[in-house]
Length: 352
Image (tube, rainbow, N blue to C red; front, side, top):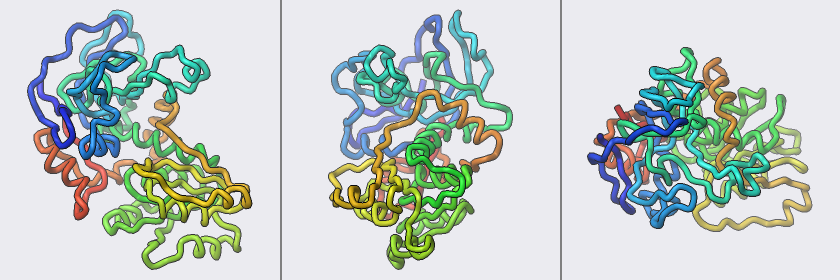
């Protein structure tokens, strides 16, 4: 079967690989439909391997070369003898996190912080940018008829974005700033608006500004021409916003977040920083600000996110800027997304 396989930095190949073998009793054989290229995938391609193991992974023994893809929808082709929640022909979205179930964090329901965590498409035998994949029954959630396959592939990044907003404890009536309008920032803006918050968005990239405006969920502020923190204080009677969801992984954006949030407000650091960022910790103390990190999402969140999308509360397809064939994944996917002059925001890859 065809699959997009990571071998090393700048070395992703679309090649023939062996099809998955027999199913275990609780396994599900999938035919992936669409799969998103994630920021983690981009980091692996640019400077990896980082997350992709070069020695056998402690949880499942996987190692590079790695079939890519962890944001995907699929059709169920076959199920193991003990599978009850899905059957052949069902359409599903995949929750890709793999965890031990026995460590300190797993025993406390924090499976996304498992000390042995692995991930389909990054540290597993299979991934979503392939003609077939095998996952455990617990990793699939059925899609309702009200959702299409593209929306199903966007459940995973939506879960990331929603977790960032939830960690900031956003409530109806709150004012929220989202910094960085890439896919996660756009989805975070939609989710915050769906909760009843007043949303402001900060972005410098013209293409992403265009995306922000198209969402129709809040007001865009351009930090190149506007002092975002000062503007938001003016808009809130000198107080500041209740919460900031920092989605850019940028030092200046984090500093803007801390300057924009009100005293006793929350900043959720959802974008991943690839290098250290300087802040003044005294600001946290003097203004009683909560700065929270986020990592992935609760592994039980799929039914809730699917319900939000399926009921039309979030028009997640708006974040998709291109849909490409697997054969074009390097040139039209990774290279375009990493290019300083690239005009894409969220690229989905057709696996079928």
